Image 1: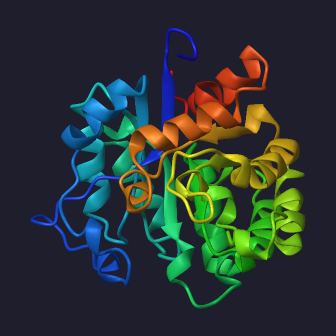
Image 2 (image 1 turned 180 degrees about the vertical axis):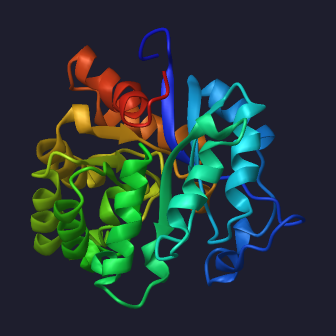
Amino acid sequence: MTGQTGIVDAHQHVWDLAARDQPWLRLPGNEPLLRTFSEADLRPQAAAAAVTATVVVQTVTEPAETPELLALAAASDLVAGVVGWVDLQADSVVDALAALLERADGGFLRGIRHPVLIETDSRWLVRQAVLRGLAAVGDAGLCYDLVLAPEVLPAAVAAARACPGVMFVLDHLGNPRFDPALGPAPDPDWDRNVRQLAALPNAVCKLSGMLAEPPPGRQAGEGVAHLRPYYDTVLNAFGPDRLMFGSDWPVCTLSASYASVVAAARELTADLSAAERAAVLSGTARQVYRLG
């Protein structure tokens, strides 16, 4: 436990294939995820891992999904916040954000995300229309989650500099290419770009995604030594007050159980002080996403 509040899982998903298609689940390797995942599926696993609050994150670029996630949060005592989606480049982005926030359950909206992974333009984040949309996100009092390929990190740095009123949340450490066969040291470009983003006061990072990576030739849950170079980079760059745990459930189940992912976060943070560990496992997420 991290105190009376328990652990906050700052990054999990749900989807109902009967309600909405998820085309990305048909990408090679994602076939085990091609079914419905609900909060009810996560609840017992979260309870067993002492996770008492989560942030549910968008999965598709369709406006109808975010209201559904808000309704889920309003009916749940586990889901405490929502990172939804709007079309950042639309002329109506201000109105779209206002409409979400004005809903009876709009108070659960804590951030916006657009999966930059689907964009072929590595400079998409610094398009003028996107920057206007990002500024609107900040004006609405919301964060912006960054999910991107590592080569897009320079554009993320530029966008964060251009939008100082927006808190940028880097998902999955910026998706570094994890290949232990190439040696334990992270890619120097990723290391440099992550540190440049961390140098900005309006950026934080999620300790997520990589926690499900198994050791070379072994199963997930058999130690975290292979993860430490990546963890050490973001811990040193952002500090515990700007680093937060996220499971990336159910995507993590492609290679690790929910319990294993939480255990990896606990093991990596074991050497921190009690206050620092509490920040990574709950406090940073509560502050950044205003979870109370």
